[in-house]
Length: 103
Image (cartoon, rainbow, N blue to C red; front, side, top):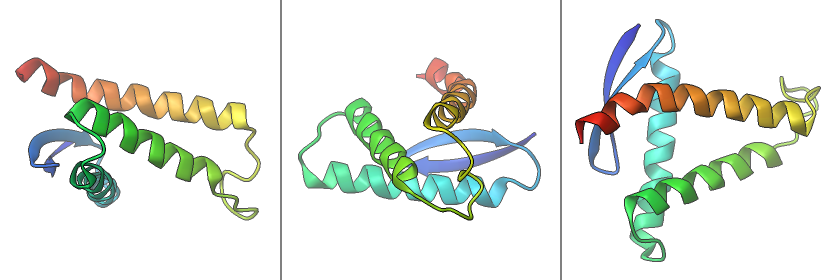
């Protein structure tokens, strides 16, 4: 595993990923940081936890609304997409839980 130091909404995190996945993870971090900063700057959502949940919901809605007949998700049912999201959530929990223990 490779460890990357990243910043999301001004907070530092150390994330782990497999070799070759660094660029994708950095792009995901950048996208999430943008979503969270936009929510924070709007002043409509208060608290880091709420901002994170609203950003996650926004990203999930974007993901589920994409309809790509040629894409890798075109043959998946909504249930399968939900299962994939739950799997990704479990991976994120595993990666982020050491950070929560430091606070």
